[in-house]
Image (cartoon, rainbow, N blue to C red):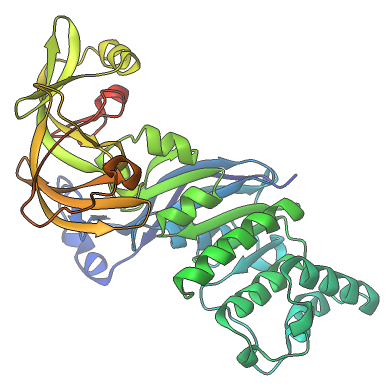
Length: 399
């Protein structure tokens, strides 16, 4: 078993100005927010009340924009950052005060962190030699890791003779050769080009099927998160926004941040109205009134959501070019991008920029959408997301 539990984890970085003025601070002063992070008399709250239970052999991805606290959280699990408050458990043992070397974890960094004067074999052997393992066991473990990662032919080379993808394989090999309980990966693919990133994502998926360990993976790339994770933890400003499977967060985003962050291209969002027409919920965008699907009707009714101004979100791939009478939204093409199997139409509609993705098969060879071309589009009620204009929360899941 290799379970990890984070209970009410917080990381606060004291700030010099706060310390100087702490004695002068009034009791009734409200917490400030500076650069979107909460600031109190204690300092900058980089991670706030983080709670997560990770199952044995689960692949968890922490994802969010730069500065959201995901790497700080990973470094607290590794023991490289002190935990300000909360409890961290590995296999039900509290490890807040356990040294990194005694946590039985391994970490893969963004910049490879290989020893340049050592060969690949020596890099892989190094953590095992520190454990004073017998030479025969070291050789066996190194050869097995090299075979899993396809780097056997590079064992006698130095890192400078390897490509970026090969170096990252070696860095991963050095981590897995120890057979750690938990493997931590901090944006390991961000230094690679697009083609290599795609290859390495596939390698990591195959790797997790061959080794018995729990993965915690940090990235700012939502494509990596969607393809690698059993579950995704989406963070913003040190706070968890949503936890779920890739399909769950794609289909049911909890707020506009998650909706805009997950999915590529990002979700279109328009100002509209939530109405009740003949007892049924519908969204109104300009003159188009689109009735929502039955499952959405039930969730909105369960929360007794009233008619109101809302933000309507629809993914570009769910937009439909059509001429359904009375249900059309009018827009104008700004840019047309031919992507092979699809055409991406960058449009302006309802006073906002957005994207409509059209499969080329539906266009029957007519891919010409010049700038200024007027279009009309709609979408099914089953794919519309309705967000509160003030809280930005999805009204289907409102408290």
